[in-house]
Length: 566
Image 1 (cartoon, helix red, strand yellow):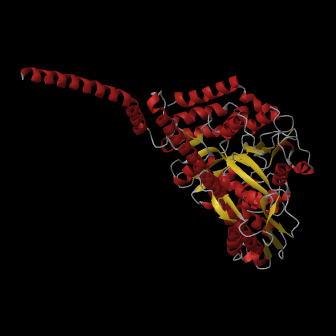
Image 2 (tube, helix red, strand yellow):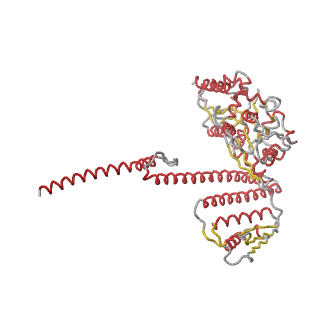
Image 3 (cartoon, rainbow, N blue to C red):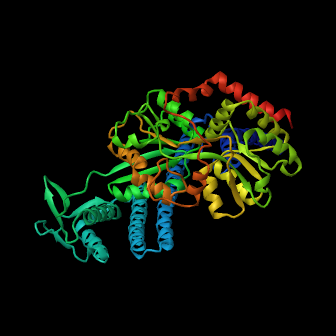
């Protein structure tokens, strides 16, 4: 009996030891899974990078499946984010243009002009609806293409259902639509496909026939077998539209400021669609250096534009419209200015009395020093490292005399605040966050002052720098005709009139019969404007302060002046 018990005890001990080893082996084998769990739990929501590390052969399939799932999720997320960005941009641009047309209609005293504006508003509303439908339909098709949605379908019912929906459209009242599938035997319209994608494709073809055909168009839809394949055709009696073209514009100009110009251009050129991408000036310059390939490049930083054109990436344009531009606004028939925008001081009239402001640049330092208590941490300027236009204005001020250095030093003593962009600086002034801002782009300041009685703009009497937003077309374009058409519109009399009447920008040409508060302000300052020259043989001079050594020295001196006084 004792031998039996001893044997069982030994066996139990060996079993426990064996179980211990099994437990250790399982724990070791599952440790990669615990590492994966810890990695996934510790990740922020936006981290969709693959799980790193080597996995045991036994779970390599699971490891690869997890990373494959993460990759698909990341791709879908990026597609969704891109779609949201596209919809937001396109909708914002279209709605801004629509709002502009409606505002002008409301302000119009002439019934004929009001009617014309309302007609344009209706056209813009139709375009907005059409664009939104196209974006949503395109995204739906892309979304469904990633999923196994292919099923056996019959084409005849799909066509019938699509036509039944579209015939409710008021545009179809005078249009005759026929559907011929008589030559197709019963049951031969079956195929493996996604019914919704086919319906959207058919809807798009019919919509194009409506848009580009005459009011009494005839649309013939046929379904037949050709070369052993099903053929679904949509034909109409219209002349056919021109090949649709898309212009991509990279611009350092706020979207609302350019929206009316874009809307008017697209209304005049219905087969051209503009994709407008907004940048900061420095980021735009860096994107172009990195090899970006837009159709048109627009920026207020004239020196950065000259730098890009000087690298040989711009197309030379010879158009008679350019002869009307001031000589200082053109460089080598490749870079063209289309606005006239002065640097001004913008101030909050509730915090600063306009009569107290300096009259000349040399008086600015004394003005800031004499109001040191009330202006402490309440003056705004551009951050020269992130703002191309700020750096341009600062370097051009430095060319005018030593007072620029003294002003920078006294700004440092006042605890000056730096901003990336004009809109932020102007908004901070209007809200009272700061009392005034120096070297603000005048068009934004005057637009804000016209809307907000708290905001005033101040010109100096000795000189006021003037920059021109400039545009160029990159040299390597497969079809530059549409891009050239847009640049030509910018500097045409019609385009300049749109800029003057519908945009917050100021045109470079003196457009006839254009009056208003902003133009009266500019006329009152004639003689004090100092344009930053592209032409007159001075364009290359703008590259002086873009030399790496010169730029670093200038920025280090600027930093030191602001820092040493604090």
